Structure formats: structure tokens, C-alpha cells
Image (cartoon, rainbow, N blue to C red):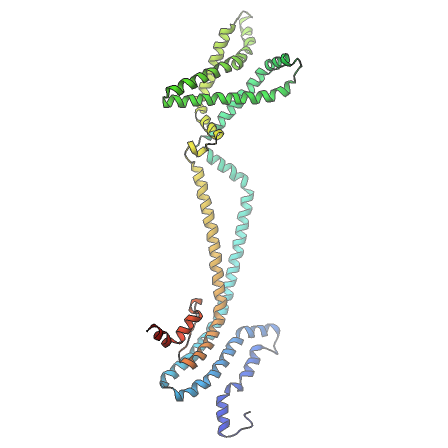
Amino acid sequence: MFNEVSGAWKVILSFLFFPLFFQNDLLFFALGVDDTFWLAVLKRLFLLLPVVSVIVGCWVTVPCLVSVVFRVNRSDFLIKFFLIWWDLGKAILSFWAGLFKFVFIFITAVFGLLKLLVVGTWILIQDLLFIPFRVFKNLGTGIFDARVPWIAFLLTIIWCLLEAVVFTYVMTPLVMDTLSNLTGQALSENLLRIPLFLFLFFLVLGSYAVLSTWAEALSSRKIGAILQIGIIELVALFVEVVFLYREFVDSLVPWFDQHTSGEFELGIVGTLVIAGLAWFGIRGMSWVLFASHGTPLLLAIIQGAGVTGNFEASSAGEKKNALKIELIGQVRGEFEWALEKGNEVFNAFLIPPLQILAASVNFCTFLLTAVPLFQIPLTKLDQIMDSKGLLEAAFPTTKSKKQA
């Protein structure tokens, strides 16, 4: 096209279409057509957008300079025009620096994520391996630091089991003879001991339950309840002394005979007195030591009232809740860190190419309105407004007229 004309027209056309002299060579170099694969990738990554933006700026420069003849404030327009090119240079430098910044932030985020995964996996493995030790630790803390009398509760259960075992051994011959006489058949002693043990275990538990209820009635000074439960306690005393402790005392008769040369006659009165004293001694000792605190807890569990219904919350439970809250806060903090790091990587990925695009758009808007649309360099995505904000920034006079 330039060879077909000559003289002044050639100079004018050369001025109007001067980007044609170098744009193909620049694009060919930026694309790296004849280069190796990795060199071509690097050129397209670092040079393609800057080269395209420079070519766009050159094409917009021509009508901008031509329009100077028809503009009013020529000096201000030219100064702003040179600043647009200055902004393009800053955008290109910010684009290259932003690429390196994105790589650094991305690598940092990847290492942070790997660290989070490794530490989280290690903590999970530790939790799985040390669950038994943690259970025993929490159990010991709950027992020794709690306000709930778990030790008294366990000792009450153990003592009831011990009494049930002893009385099962003592009562088995009598119960077996009685049932054999009733059925006319011999019963197996091993099969009889299991239901007899369960019966005696619940009988002993019931005895402590009646004693605990009577103690509560005495502390509240309710005469009616004291008399009613006192009668029940006397019945329980009679049943246990006659059927349990009497047999226990009878089992000690051979020991008395051994030390009295067979001349010792205990009699029914002496047997019942010793059995009653044994009942009072055992019940009093166990009641003072642990049963007075363990039996109310046992009744609360059986009645479904819950441990916290009659007792204060244990400090172990408070510590456990505190640990749960701390764990939830830690997990929430890790998620917030991951979200923040993801937003940082996303911003670092978008801002470098937006620098070039914003500088190219500034050339076009400056040609039409003599006002650049974006402030270069961009540091955060908040500087990229929505379409409505861009229109208001491009046409401030129209906005002011609407408001008026």
C-alpha cells in the first residue's frame, strides 16, 4: 500500500498506519513461532499481552494525535495522553512483577496446604493411637476431679456384688433343698447359683435404696415419710437377718463348737441377735464409708433423672466442653486460613493480566472521553468496578445531570 503512493500522501499514510511497520514482527516474536516449546511458552506468558497492549496503544495514538487539532484543551489532553503511555509502562512492569508474585504466593499456599494436610494427618493418627490412653485419662480426671461421687458409686456396686456372692454361696444349699422338696427333683447347683446371685444382688441393692430413702426422709423431718419408710426398713431388716445373715451365722457354728469343745449352744435368740448386729455393723460401716453418696447416684440413674439432675456438673465435663470448643475453633481457623489463602492466590492470578487489559481500555476511553477509566497499577480486585460503576466513572457529567 505504501509503495503505490508517493510524496506527501506516503508520509501521511505512514503516519496514520505506522503500527503496520512493526506489529507483525512483534507478534511473531511474542508468539515464539520458531522457538522451542518452553521458550515459546515463556514468551507467550511474559510478552504476548504486553506486545498486544503496545500495538493497541499505537493504533489509538494516531486518532488521539489527529483529534488534537479539534480539541479545546490541547495541552491538558496531551499531558494526559503521555500519562496514559506512562500508565501502560507501569502496567507492563506490574504484570511481570505480578507473575512472579503469583508464583511465590501459589508455592507458599501449596506448602501451607501440604503442611496442613501432614499435620492434620499426624494429629488424626495420634488421636487414633492414643484413644485408649485418652479414655483412661478422661475417666481418671472425671473420677478424681468430678463433683459427682463416682468412686462411691463404684464401691457401692462392688460391695453389693460381694454381698451377693457371699450370700449366694451360703444360701445355695438351703434354696436347693427347698426347691427340690417342692418339685420332687434334684436341681443342678451350678444352674441355681446364677438366678440366685441375681436375686440376691438386687435384694442388697434394694436394701441400700430403702436405707437411702429413709435417710432423706430423716433429713427432711417428714414424720409420715419417716414412719412409712421406717416400717419398710424394718421389713427389709427382718428379711435379710432371718434369711441371709442367719444362714451366715449358722455357717459359723462349727467354728464356735471348735473353740468350746462342743458345749456351746447359741440358740435362735443368740443367732438372730448376732445376725442383727452383723447387719447393723455391715450396713453402718458401708453406709458411712461410701453407700450414703453412691446410692443416691444409683437411684438417679435407675429413675432416669440424670446425673446432672441431683448433682453439679463435673469439672471434667467443663474441661471436655472447653476442649471441644477449642478444637472447633482450631478447625474453623484452619478453614478461614484456607479461604483467605485461596482468595489471595485468586487475586494474584487475576490482577497481572487485568493490569494490561485496564491499560488498553484506558487508551480507548481516553480517545472518546479524554478521561482514563482505571487507575494504574491495580493492587486489588476492588478497583475493578462493575459495569454501572464503570459507566458512571466514564460519564461523570451524565451522572451529575441525573442527580440534578
